[in-house]
Every structure is written in structure tokens, then in C-alpha cells.
Length: 594
Image (cartoon, rainbow, N blue to C red):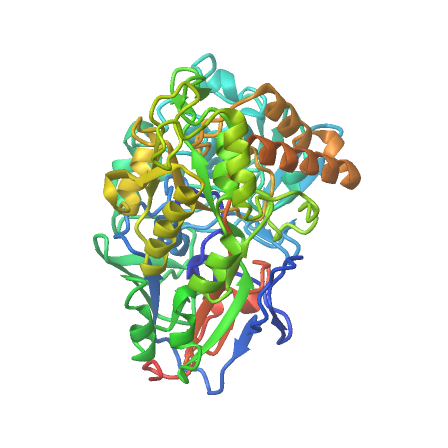
């Protein structure tokens, strides 16, 4: 997966700040009738007396080297966001219900009728990792940076445009953002055009990002991404650690941040290394790493290891297949559809979805730890997920009939369908390189599509390294007809940031007035009413299904392996739980248990 806002990663950067309750077990957190029956603990306390300090080793399980952007405001893929999370941090915390709370770096005060949110730093004594004082000017400066016309990241979207005066500032009509009213050195009142319920959630429209003004104000915004202060040991943040050394693409060694606002971490060093999913099981068995997110396809090879405890949770993420339907227009700052795109017919897109037996793939390739779902709003979001929504349940006969009725017929008798005008129909799909199970899955997709008469081939004949994959997706390379990828959803179900007209993450580039109207209802004051909110989400789920610009494939459980020398660990959500803060992590021996 690539691109994310907050806390969506199967990584220590996220899991380590997740909340903890009393010991308990859970199959998952979703209302999912296809859920597997394997039970995982959600937290563990290992035996032993904690040592002082120590070095914790975390495996960043990935098939590709990391890029190396170590600040949240610019990081745009899961690996970089993980690595940035140790040196950088967001200013808000959230509870076990995903709701923003006032226990972090800052507190929030909402005035819905007045359309304002007041944000106040909870202490006047916060310091950046270089010892420089933190003020509200840093937070305001971050808005100005992300909203600047030269900003090269992916954060600027409708949530920022919703601030009074932001668009005038972005287009150079004003030197300041009128909607940011500084009250004093430690508080700001933000004036919004509209208020909506996602503002109450972690990962929602209120920006959680804060960056050191004393560093970045001296660097042109266009140069931030290439700056040493974004890519090297010079990174200055508010996280629990600072960077000690980097092996580009391979590993990062961190040391404790003496100025961390929750107190100096109890471990002295954190070493994060990129590890292939093909070798992580043997590495954990050998005791090389303390914590790793484990490949579900290999579950039977590590489920009985004696030196680790397996923890699990329903993952706030999904795999999907989507279609290349347009492009991103930099001048307009929005997605623009191509009405002549090869995959512009929703009937063709729906048939492609009905041809896949996702549940069977989850059972055979992922030990039942992944499975199909019926909606782009996944079961993780119990409050708005519609379990009654029609999904694309495996139905090849229906897929064949849909194609036949729509005019996609086998004209020349070769078993493969032609376009409606009789010309040859060939469809390319782009897929990212991951592990052996994913390779097998992609090949099975091709067979299922051939079974309904569609000639679908893997672009270039093979899967693509993940960084190159997303470069092609973001530019909507004309060779791509459809692609398979993944999203981490974070804790805000609002789909606007992924599928909205001005969302850079909307890699399908699908846009319609009908969808925009529904998304606007989700992002409205009317949606503060829970019944209306569910109604609007239900409407969008049906619309997304009918249009099939993208459809979900796999959802499931994230499995974390924890070496038994880690004293306490939890996968429960709720960053406001101090016991599970990164600074509280402890080890019970100098060396991992083998």
C-alpha cells in the first residue's frame, strides 16, 4: 500500500501507541460472517524483570527498500510513515473508539454552530528534539506549508480547503490564512467553512501535523522534500526517538529523545530493518527481531514458535482492484475523467468483480486470515459499515451474462470476448511485488477472468516493485487499464480523502456529480446526527458498488509476532493509554529469546 494519513500501518510505529486493557482475546473486531475461527490475544505481558535500557529490534516487513522521507508531512507510503513515526509525532491522541481526546500534545474545543475548533498546547514546556521550544506558531506554520502552492507532498486536499482563507492563500491572493486565528503563543482558533463529524475522529479533517518552524522556515517549500531535515540524521521532531544512523533503503538506528514529552523512552535504542516477507519467519525463529507484522500466508510455519507470542487484530485496511479512468490535473487541482477510457463501462467493471472467488483465495492462500468483503467501507467501521450491502460474491455465470447482454461477445470463436464494436478486447493489469502468495493470487485472477472470456494480462508480464508501481499509478500511465493495490484506512471512514474529486489518492480518477453530492452529505453538519450519518454512508456504499470504479478484495487480521523478551505489548487501539506508549516499552533481557 501507499499513501496514508495517520496510524494505518501494520507496524511498530502505529501498534506501539495503541491502547491496552486487561488481557483478552478476539478473533477480530468486525461484524463479518466469514470470519475465521483462529483466536488471537490482543495484548501480552511476558514474564521477567525489565532491564534498564537495551536495544529493541523491529522488522519492517516489506518486499522493497524504503524511500527515506522521515517526516509525517511529506511521507507518502507505509514504510516511510512507519519510520517517520519514531522521530515525528502528531499532536492529538485518540481513544479506543477512535475519538480524538485531549491527552496528547494539544487539546481541542469544538464550537459546531460557530464553525470553529480551538487547539491549545497542553504545556508551555514542550521542546523539539534539538531543544528548541514548541509554540503554536509551529502548528500554524505547518498549515501554511502544506497549503503553499509549492508544497510537493500529498496532504493538501479538501480538508485544508475547508479552512476559511486557505484557497486564497494557496493561490497567492493572500499572504496569510485568514481562518487561522492565533489567540496566544500556545493556542489557535481555526475557522471552517463547514463542520462535519469526522472532525471528532483520529485521522479526520483536523490536521494532526506539526513541524519545526525554526528549521523549515529557512528552506523553500519546494525544497523540503530533498532537505537533509527530511531525509537524514538531521530530522528534528517531537517523537520518542531521534535518528542516529541510516543505511539507505535498509535500516534506521534510533536513539532515545531526551526531550520527548511523555518522558525519555525506557529503551536506549531502536533498530528498524527492512526484511523480506520470504525470510521473516526464519528471522523471528532465530530471535533476530523483537517485533514484526507477519505474513498471513505463512501462518502455519510460525504459529507454534516457542520464542514469540502472536497477537492479532482486525486490520483497518483492505486490498482492492481499481480501474484507470482519467488523470490528475495539476492546473485544476482535481481529478478529471477520460470518457473514452477502455474501462469506462461499469458493466464491464462489475463483471470483472463477479468473476473472482475472493473467499476461496483467502482460505487457500492466507489460511482464512483474509477474506472477501462487500463494501469499500470495511467491517472495521462498525458504526457505518452496511453488512446488508450487496457485494461482488463469486458468480461467473452472472458475469458472463452481463458481458453478453452488454455486447461483449466472442466474435471469432477463440473463447475470448471482443469489444462491442467487434475489435479485440485486451485488458492490462498492474500489480505490485509482495510475496509468493500474492504472485499466486494474481495468476489465479487471470485464470478466473479467462474463464468468463476476458483476455487480461499482467502488464510487462510480471508484478512490479512497489515504489515503481505507485509511480506509474500516480501518473495514470496509459498502459494501465486496471490495477490491484491496498489501502490502510486509518480511523476515519470518510471516503472523501480516497475517492473525492480533489483527492490525489483517488488513483482511479473517477469523478461524478452524484458521488460528490453524496460525499458532501457525509461531510456535512447534518451528518452529526448518527442516523443521518449511517444513511449517507449507506448511500455511498451502494453507489460505489454500482459504479465499481474500485472494488474490495481482501480484508482480514493483522498478525504481530512479539519476542518473549518484550515485557508488554498490545494491538488494541487507543493512543491515550500511557502503559502502551512507545516510551514505556521495556525488555526483560539483553538479547532476544531464541
